[in-house]
Length: 190
Image 1 (cartoon, rainbow, N blue to C red):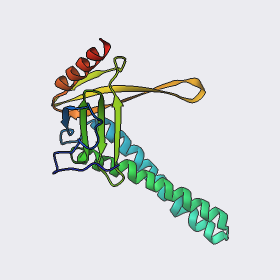
Image 2 (image 1 turned 90 degrees about the horizontal axis):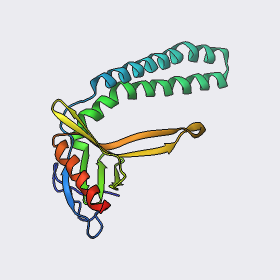
Image 3 (image 1 turned 135 degrees about the vertical axis):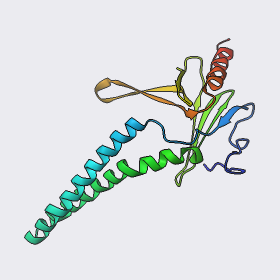
Image 4 (image 1 turned 120 degrees about the vertical axis):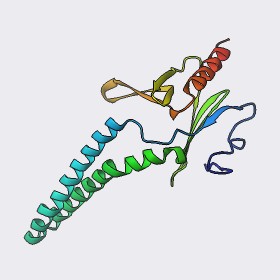
């Protein structure tokens, strides 16, 4: 589903929303890169994969080709290439995506749902209903807030349960959004 825009900062939601649903709040994340310690660790891991992948390509691929083992050469190439790609992705692309989030991501809160739109090459529109039992958390940071408005539990391996926080990350008016969500839940509970 494509989401039309009027300009870089405004979105058209009217063709997406069902009858009776109305926008209470809308906005993008603030510009800037957040959660730097995590990004540094992910980059170091990505660089490790990159080095490992390149080492496989440099060391084992020529040996396998020289020995005439097509299967080994193919395996060394595929493994080395995949590790190299994973390394580049982990080390570089996640920084670019974080730096562009204020351009590519839009959030909206309606009287029924929370919407998260990713405007990338693939693009996505996700909606999460606001229910009385929806877990809501406001996380205050210096200069920005995160509002975790939906916790989804999925069965993990061997019957374990995992929790995924989904919400509005890096917004300026987190207290307002949190209060709106709580008022939606209160109205629905009555």
